Image (cartoon, helix red, strand yellow):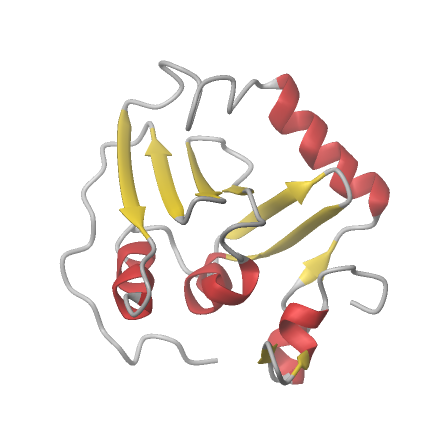
Length: 160
């Protein structure tokens, strides 16, 4: 984490100060790893149209981040029905990438994403789904799976 240029989002009190246990679950990539993720996204042409390449995903969903709707966004991410222990890749750009579990994306999305400055793509190795945090405070979710959002939501879901 010491070399990660976005570490301040997770390690400084004025932004978000995660516990050492949670920081250990965030695995920043070095420059080579971050470039690999960015090149992979580019080569697959995931974002060749906005938000995703036409016909890449059968099902699309969208959420708008507004001031004061943080809990609704957390619930919306929770309801994507992705297993919490699923390893996911985060790519901000060719210099910043990370591997973590889906539950940390759901729990800390507002530390991972900063509207106005970030475009962040989140996906897993199957590429059967992807999530785009767009800099205009929009989140897009695309999937090829038969998709139904989880209806129930347990506010006490996040325990380690």
